[in-house]
Image: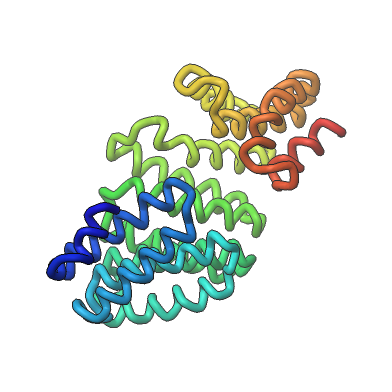
Length: 278
């Protein structure tokens, strides 16, 4: 922030460095919870960069992508979708349909569509992204896993359970072949447990979720929201296996952290409360 202030009093910085500094400042403000300040800084950065570098410069396109995320933070999903769609066309025109920047924009567009309950187009866009990564960026298992987790959320809402399990298994295999760490696979394994549970394969779901719970208890301790989520899923599986007391005990243990992290009206918390009252 001091460097940006000093730059205002001296000769202009090289345009790419100016954009990078302001983007980093925006990121830092966002991490501190100052989303208004972060958005304001990024708007200034984008305006300056569009003037000096041009609207079609790749990092300028990325800055537009980052700026749109603030609309998602305010749950302005329809507006975000409109702007991501326009940006996607620009990225495809300038960089090509399968460029990494284009894929970043496509993923964010799909995520906004999911939040806006436009599940069919969200699924199509996540699938398009998965196909490109499997063919062109097979070594980028982190992006492959992230896309698979997002796609799993869409598929669960569309009741595509068998397809969701197949897609998550494919992503896990790709990550394992690239020596991913277990913690980085956790969300994918959690979705795998979810699909197994919903498909009625309760013993497999139990084993999958028990493995995650045990690993996170050892690695991260009680004050971890991921552990609370995994305990909830394991508890729900146990209840369906008629191990009702054991399952409810796990749900009860998870509930305070879930409320603290998500608030009392979040769907995850409602699911937990529903399990305790059945």
